Length: 427
Image 1 (cartoon, rainbow, N blue to C red):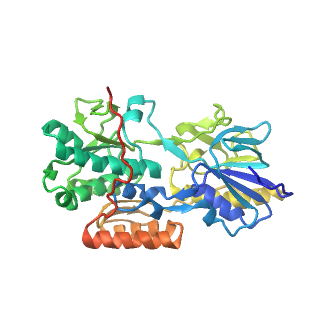
Image 2 (cartoon, one colour; image 1 turned 180 degrees about the vertical axis):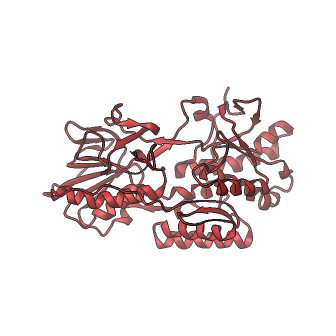
């Protein structure tokens, strides 16, 4: 990998997400050698992926080059690499571009879509965890409307204009709200020769409420917002299969849909070598202690979505969101310096700063530790928070200008089929 030999301890970070970037920043000016490995050369702001999928933003406005984030810091090295294995016996990371030894290893590999073993759903539905996946979804949505113009089969046309979103968490709710706004304000203008009133947007949730991690009031208000936008919310229904055409459930209810988005859950992106049963716990996550050390190791750590910190407040681990990841990254940076100096580390304590979700124009729900509110003010708060956490001044300005333009013109300029996407269909 052409990493220079140094007398400083070498810390390898796997993953350039919220956790990995926060840790690298914390260590960047210290007397350690930091090597960050990621299969992408950019940091991806996942909370806004749904806006890329629905044409509200271009992907380069929510991505930022990892090298640019830490370009002025000494002893920092980035390599574009896909990590395939960790050899814990020889303290070596094995990648597609070569192997590298470490003194300390931090796994921040994040999460991936969890299909719960359903191979048909994995094959035929759409995920939305990465920028390429979001661009694929954007192309598919637009291509389906183009195909709907061409078919004379009414059932096929309805299926092409039918959207099923599996999962009523923030991702599913925000995507449904965006699609509802497209149906209302854009489709009638773009496709005047289609009866866009036939467009159906369905959210299927296996539990008795959407936004399950938020307050009951936020959940109910979000459902009210969706229903006012014309979204059908189906609760206490579990999707059992999707064959590329028909969505089947554990009830008699079925859906004929050409676009199914799977937002029903995620799991840790485990790396070979750390996949033994004694390391892995609920949600395919690495079990760590209060110092984020992987069980059984003092020099291997895990932070972010991949790490499961169990305590009385979060018996199933911390939520797989940006805030826990950022806080873990910052805290671990301090702890690693203490560890190197031979001083006792401080246990990680998560400070819950709340949760929020937007359901479209002037509609959002916000749960803060001491306040809970919904509606237009919550929407402005949601926008401010997301702008604040975007990396890069240019990205903040581009996103802000896009949002202002979209708000004033009720338009989404990025509805472009840059690269066609052909969805797999069952033969």
